[in-house]
View 1: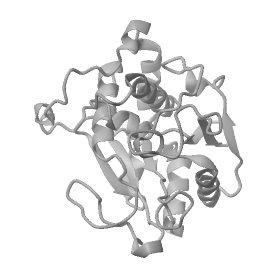
View 2: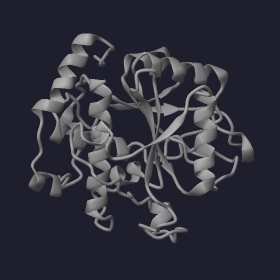
View 3: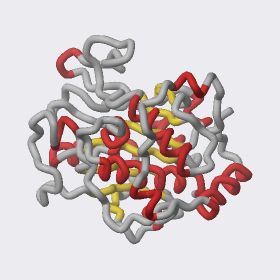
View 4: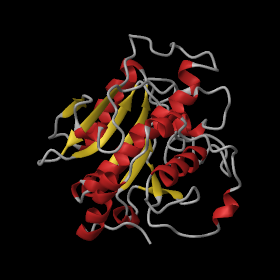
Length: 289
């Protein structure tokens, strides 16, 4: 079973934001699960919420066109970066959702889906990584077909919410604006500040934290230092006619890495906590708007 676009579900899920509460002490210790558990403990149960990642057509520079082959976990060779951090990011994020909300899910309930698959419309929350490597190049990243653009527009106009992630520096920002303009050429891209309700619908977030990307800011000789004032973390959005946020894009931050490295001792715990908090807010907003 998946969450469908039904008013009854929206009423139930809107109530979650009122009924659920995490104390400051609990937030400070967020996602300390103790160990990277064996997912087999969850059996084969299909939960109400399945976290879906979008698989998009990739730029063909460097012979990496089409969807590309998955780079890890059963795939090989080149291809796009749509599966960056998959599936560890999804598994860990769902652990956080399961622990801090009453949403019916578990770490096994995630999948990736082609944007033109009709099953997309059975979901309410879509995650995508729009990374280009090298930054600003045409060797990777989304190159949407007209069919994919139409599917994404329809998904969001039906009430769906899209979160895109992992942009760093001006070339990535320019790419992000270009891709969002392909989907919504008629709509303004706005920068959200922390007074927007999306930052307070579950956790109160008064500052957009920079969640470090492993390849960008640390551990692999990245090109910038964490909290570099030249790379401020920001959240951009596209709104519908009623002001509902349909799409958010996280800039100069990498929530996927924050989830993926939850169990890696070298990764700062605070950054993982920040990644869960803002993404859970996005999720609750999607369910309740």
